[in-house]
Length: 262
Image (cartoon, rainbow, N blue to C red; front, side, top):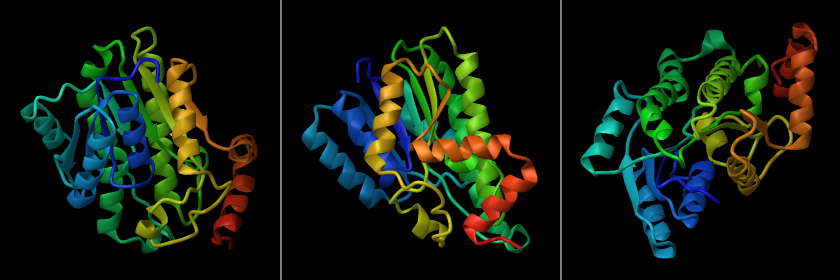
């Protein structure tokens, strides 16, 4: 990476995209703050990164579904004298099934992680990111962000929110030097599906973890000329088709693909 941040916070860093983003930023010379619930995994990844690269890797165990989690994380950064100028908001949850059957506690957790934590972290860190010539803000959205999906209504809506927020921040920060990007993978071989308790999220072109991070870093190297990118050409075509087709048609297609057709 041509202009790496000095220190990047990566949420959901214990596996998948988050772990790969952390490794790649560390390889470019950035210190990394690894955030997730599982401290043992974070400590293992931190040891791996510090062994391979001359950087500082700081594990921070945090449950982003809890009230005040974002503020507590910022307090921890200050306490450890970490001067952050990068954020990769990768942590996310999924719920599958009819919305009327969704567990209210699970709904709260999803909104807290996918929407509230992303929003609060972006707001609390944005002044620091804008003040750095090497600042980056990356959100990991989904191809689900580009259309409503029956039986995955809340997940798709939360990712649409994140995409919309990120694209607006991209425009607001133009000329500041801050690189802002929403990266939208299709289904990937991560632990997301096991955590969500369903394989029905595997809709669209499968993409590798490395391919997702590769595209994100290429875009950042170019100065993030576009506010968002979809990973996989078939996913890009399907997402565009969903946006231009009549809503009833795209909803019917999405419902059939996820097994939620009626």
